[in-house]
Length: 242
Image 1 (cartoon, one colour):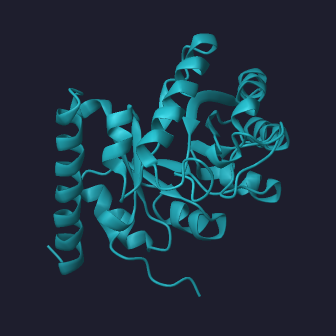
Image 2 (image 1 turned 90 degrees about the vertical axis):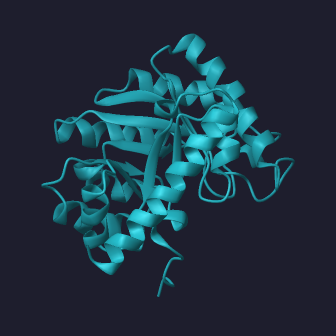
Image 3 (image 1 turned 120 degrees about the vertical axis):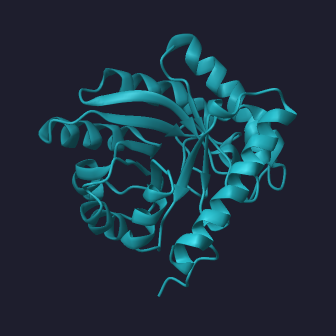
């Protein structure tokens, strides 16, 4: 085993232990939580090693990095999640490799994703990204790190549900840096779960709740997240983006 692979294996084991402990603490089964490893800024060789170590879900946030990496790893059985703010001019490329887009936050993006999915004869999973720092904002306001204000969730969900080539999977959030939930990750994730429960009432298949990262995955698991997105704790501190 190479030094890098050994390092990844040790890091994965630690993250696995954290998720298992977090589940046990609130009486959840470990299999209720899916680990998504965020591989942004890291090479395709790391993705290959992660796959050898049992990782099946990976996430990227920049199409220019993700597209060549996904092509280089096309022979692997991986589910690719796109988690970054997505411009409509990147949609066709993202749709060619992503299985799930977690950052759907406006109607224009739904329309573009649907057209691209139909064109490429693919079905794309979609999560509505919720901006908890835009909670008291006007309808349609977006958060600092992307996402739709909570009062826009249902309209977007209905649009995804009605769009050809798209499948409504659930909700995603990034713990906000501003507003009433800044520094209160557990409260933020509890709030997201309230919205997720409400969403499922009208869209029973939308069961996915993506929340929590390296620093706060325990809070996300405690709140009920089904997916956690972990980068640094698995891959190490990211190299600078030049």
